[in-house]
Image (tube, rainbow, N blue to C red; front, side):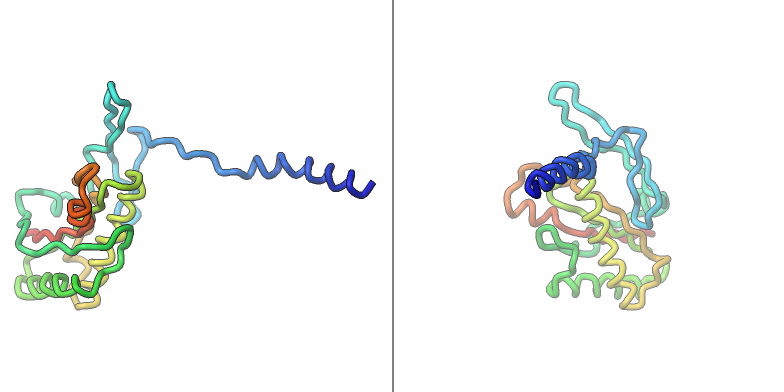
Length: 184
């Protein structure tokens, strides 16, 4: 009789366990939004290939268009900061690059800095956007500890948008970075 009662209890709990199981999150639609570096919503557009069914996010609009305008950006003046796979922590060997960026900003008080976080092609779009955001914000916070004002910096996650798909180990290592872009 005791065993029969336990079986009935288990049978009664099974539906409760199934109800609590997480459901697969649907892919984002063009009407959805993603979160930007400060938690604000950023609009984006998804394009789906009619033949393969593959989708990708295009046309991400960041909150501060002054920083995003290519007309006032100087790329390549500062070296990119590289990261280990799936990590946003700043490697000791990369800190000097961030210190160089701080020195540039102190020497050029009218310049600002756009910090773009990038990832390699592995992972979902959402995960890579979040990882790129953590990387960019980590560099920004390091610059703040060096005395650079937060109002002189903007972060932007590129996720894996610029990554080499199915890239080699070396290509993937180059994709895991933050670009430091001077904005005038």
